Length: 331
Ligand code: C5P
Image (tube, rainbow, N blue to C red; front, side, top):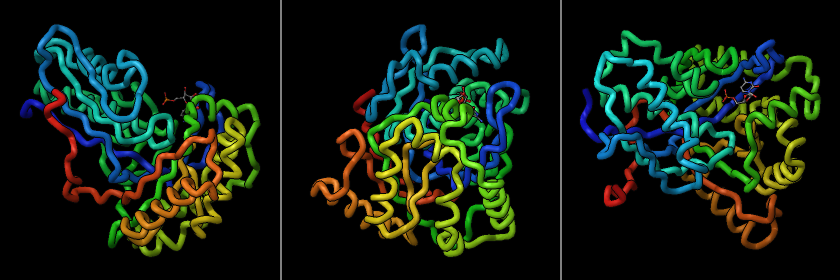
């Protein structure tokens, strides 16, 4: 049993590679993807509810109606799974959303994994008696990745998670730029399936993905990963589909690449774009440059709205948690 409240950081994820291998008979797509957690995180605090029903309060980015939030669905699923083994009392969850929504960063899935773990811990459920990964997979293809806490190879529809070693050496800086064009994952996969935005690259993305997974297994250093940025930026099979759904993404990505003078990739189903740097400080300098260019009107932004711009790092498993900005007075 864990202390009340149970507090969890729910990290964003970056797909360093994302190969779509084909469409399955169940409508999902078979993937081969190397993903890493980022230090940029939502924060979830869960405690016993005063009333008789589960509650969710969200601060920060607008995540839509609380009733539809994966956090409440995760608590529900956890309650069904524990059955009568423990007293699964009502929970009040407070979520601080710092990860942009519908951005290709897995924020909603990460919140769901954190809620699942927090609920089971608070109730004192015996996880050894449960298929927690199966529960997570039932909530969404990306949710099991976030149970692991480290880099992983994702296969199947994304729910088959094989841990990979983190790149060795100092944590790389990551610049994230999320244009204000939220993309539904389902819409991007549908565009891919319908042939809009499919490219025939002879399996190059898959080879890049397999090669990266193999290199991480044999101790790839972060400096070497940085040298692979150009190849990785090209290794996302959903990028053409995202650009088919939101055509303004393509010119924006090109313009951002010119401004940064670095390879720019897309995370997941987009629209978030990324660039790698030797350190968070270097990424922060780049982030300031992007914001200045937006302000000056020299970088044309999709939807005419300022993008979300953040400098973060690839999270190192077991590293101290970043400073806490949650104000408990909001409880
Ligand atoms: O699993 P999840 O609910 O997060 O997926 C959202 C949608 O994205 C699915 O309904 C499906 O249309 C699409 N998807 C897919 N192949 C995957 C993952 C998701 O087609 N591997």
